[in-house]
Length: 126
Ligand SMILES: [Fe+2]
Image (cartoon, rainbow, N blue to C red; front, side, top):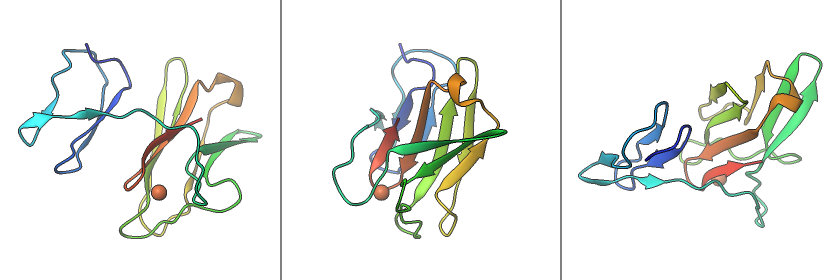
């Protein structure tokens, strides 16, 4: 079975799919099974991917790159940032040229996980 909120990737065309209802683990794209993405949590390179959560009065600001922002170039950028709570998935969609951060109207203590997907380096969470 697939699990709620899992993210799958097509190695051929780059499709990304998030599970909104559980079913059989047979997601197929371009004629082959899609790859389930496992979020990474540690970044040893200079370029930082692990989401950093900053508490604000009215919500949270999630940044990709705490001190140095992740690149937001045409060929390499953060496509989306998500914040997961017990009963919500909040997603901000980004594009090249944007600042790699997003604000969400969510209390920090309610967050189970923050994650982001880089179109070159994959899925990361904190
Ligand atoms: Fe990256």
